[in-house]
Image (cartoon, rainbow, N blue to C red; front, side):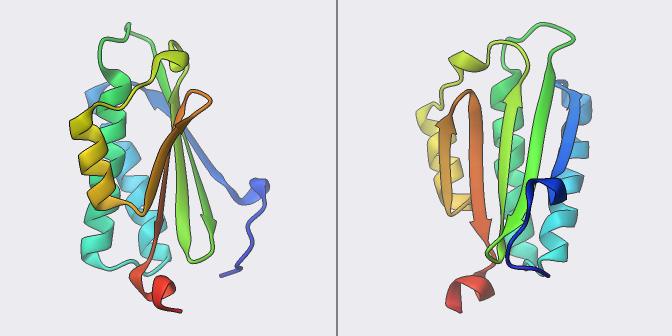
Length: 127
């Protein structure tokens, strides 16, 4: 796999921001992680992090709101950017969400209405 990834190689997924579609986002992140040879524990961490953000984005939103997720592979890991199409400017992580994300991904931040998660495979971190 190439160390550098262009925007053309990113995976973009847009789904309704409804609990029924959370599994779709988890499935895609698991597939991306598996392609990077993440361990089972690392895959579980990725799925948990994505689920936490998906649920956070879905709190109190109107029907029809959509979640956009972009997966970009780089430097032996994945960067996941998640946002909603309505009310993105009001995204805030509470203490519990920050604690959960801090334990399952290498980095996370809120930037320009998106929650960004970064995780590298443990083997890539050792290199």
